[in-house]
Image 1 (cartoon, rainbow, N blue to C red):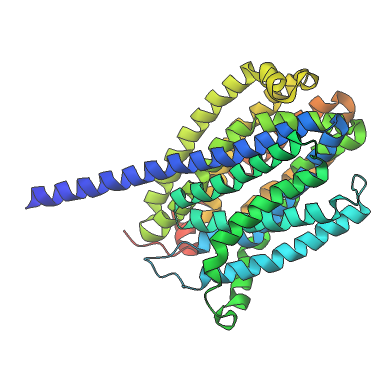
Image 2 (cartoon, rainbow, N blue to C red):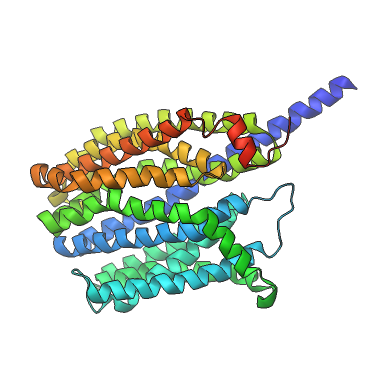
Length: 435
């Protein structure tokens, strides 16, 4: 009987390990779909638009990422933590409430983006509708992705992203082949597939009557947790995106486009980082809530060591192939900027470390540590960005990306040394089973 029980436990453990491994693989594959789509979007834009137009598109695309950072802070980030149920005790109206909150946030940020276009240096009247629509619907589709990732429904997540991004690339391809691809139609080509996919997925979540949704308390819960991610996202815009904006202002839009092209090629490494952590964060939270502190630590360590080794290998490959990759994808005009890939790629070693540390602090309900890291990096960037770019040109901007990641690592390690992730500190903050 004992032998039978041991065999059953071994079988259960093996099944669980297999499920986790499959989840990680599918999650990476899903992130590969998203990143490949973003990469090909950038390639189509670079090959269709003029150098200056592509530089302007790059600036607006970075601005879209800033708005996604705000959405992640106030909606997606809290959902990834509080959407994980303890022993299946999740409020049935939880995700419905988040959909309504996202509609409100999406409307607000779309109006804000329209206002920026009116007053912006690089804006145009033709983007006054397409860019705000893109901001609204890309955020909505991101909520759909977050809900599926939080529920560990990675196969459905992959299906959602395949529909979204295959639709986007098909639409952009048609626009490019018919000579109708402009910065205006480009953002519409991103917005429309996101709207259709998000609408199809989120439609069932309108089932509960509006009056039964706990909008107020959930919004306060999101704010209490997400305010730190919000200020972190804003600090991130200063600490990293500042280099792209200053490159356009101090040098020219063409150089900003080249910097964006280098970042797009390195997005191969982001596929790995985002894909692994998109699955690893809810798993880490589940292990902390429903198992124990040791299971949480061991999971994060295991993910971290493997992630760092994989990033080192990928950086080596991309650095060696940097020039042919730029020439093949973006054209001869960009091949001379291959050195940017080698410089920025070095920062991804620190980024891998930071990715795991961010997961640790957020699942331990310490998002304010991320803000501290971003704030310090923003201060450092504000001090060094102009001198770096003035002295070294676009290479100085690339060095700035390295400085940002090194600064983050330093701050995170400081908090670890101070005991923020010690067993007693985590147990006092999060309800963890005594084992």
